[in-house]
Image 1 (cartoon, rainbow, N blue to C red):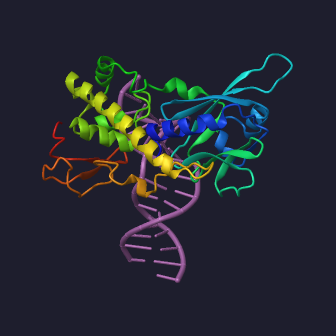
Image 2: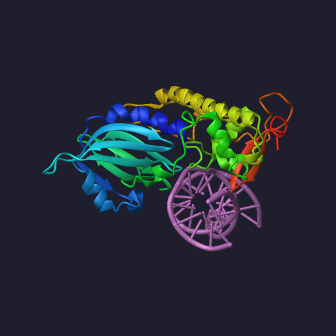
Image 3: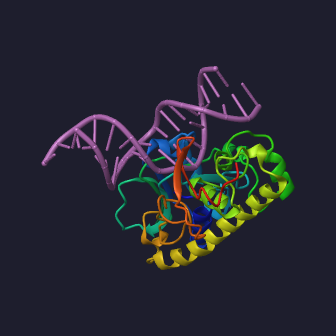
Length: 280
DNA sequence: AACGCCGCCTGATCGC
DNA sequence: TGCGATCAGGCGGCGT
């Protein structure tokens, strides 16, 4: 499940591999992959363009390209990528066999840049409108503004943290992790957090995400084989990575004597320590 | 208009 | 052994 740290790691990995490369040909192999941009339009718009920059916003990847020379001056294009639940993006030698779920293939000459997605919940598109719905990056959010924003909602804080229009980049795993570090109950109504609690929570969100990027970078370096790079969730690499996520029934790492509990909020799993996170 | 809920997707796992 | 049900969960869209 890629959240902000996984996307950040991927962006840092891909940036130097793509910079300056010209797209010879684009092949959309899954019609859904470029929604709402029509696949043929997507292929046509990007063929011949050159990768310039790559940045991240929330869980989105922003590919900046210089359009193919048409008559007038070259157009700047932005392509938006999202990994959904199971998306992967990597550069591979053209001669390598395509994975069964390759959704979009960008040919760069002797290499392919591939977006692959087992469940097709992610996408690669020219529609930039989702960016308008995003809240601030955790690093840009002033603690006062964050605290004030929480006052607007009666939803449980855990559910609220998943709202990308409030704060960008927090997903199901790091929402639980941040609340544990801030010692705040996931069930607490967002508008009932004190200003101090909100500030602690923002601090915890930043710490959890930054730590994950650092740890992930270590793992990623080990995972790279040749030109192939994967972000994978199903791995040995998750060892001791999370303090509460997926640890139901196991002892709280604060050694309080309680066991981590799993509850369902908004149809999603939440993990927390009922002793250390007693706020309501 | 904040909020709840469903659909999209495939593969792993579980119960009968 | 086989097969349907359930779960994984980010996000867009829709209904209230």
